[in-house]
Length: 362
Image 1 (cartoon, rainbow, N blue to C red):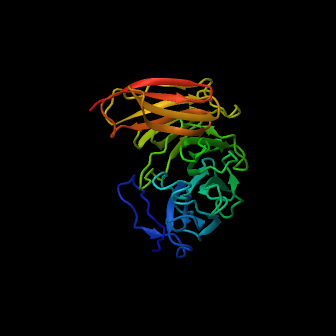
Image 2 (cartoon, rainbow, N blue to C red):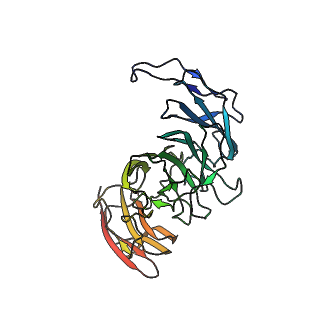
Image 3 (cartoon, one colour):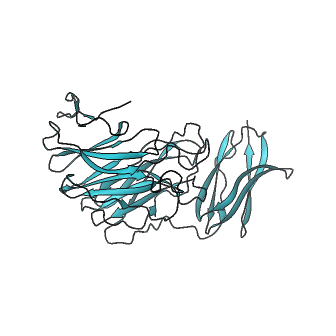
């Protein structure tokens, strides 16, 4: 099924819109046009970027750009930004243990210079069979989208871990702020956190990546993998405002964070350092009926085992048994098959042992 890109505009505050007009010049090169993002430039030009690839993913795709210099009345010729390898639809995870992702692009323009335009996308750097499912790349144009430079790698983990769903914005001073879902925290490449980076040289280089979320977000198994297709960022002169889908509470909720990163200061968040000591928190809620969240902190990479026992000392379930990286962790416990009563959960590493009590009610 082929598809095209159409554009419509309102010049009266959204009361009415112009008739849709097709702005893509050719039939899709691969399969269909997806992920269209419009952006208004400070000089009044309108930019649109989109991807051209099958929704099944994991094949060659293309990024296209178009520009209107009269507020969307007419459009120029499509510009091919680059080709790239689309991330797999269900990246690097067994059945029912991933989330559905697509290589939709994100678009930003310098609020004081209409010529500086930036496009980001998640792309598979090593193709089918390679260990790395996705990295974040950025393309820059400094002539209003007429020509584009080579892609620049944004994430700095250097590991075969997945990065997906980027979104970017450009600050008043031209700095590019970008966020994405990042799986470097999990040796199994499943759990994730929200990562941030900034470029202050027009997208040539990026800062060390900074975790935004205050805990590692557990993967919520779902046969359909629904997790949303975008996250969001907006910036002003000193603050980045970020919203994302988060599953730490056992459901798909919207979380928000705002933090300041003044120009010229080290790219480190003082409120999001690695924990200094091991700890095991009391689950919440407690007592509870169907599910609860257990959180713990690891000051170093280590083998972790988290188990649940009944009052007779019999092990009921093993929640975690794997090597994990240092950081804050959240694990969901479902008790649909557990009888009402008192239970204990125990966290064990080579250097730490702790347990807490919880109550299941019906």
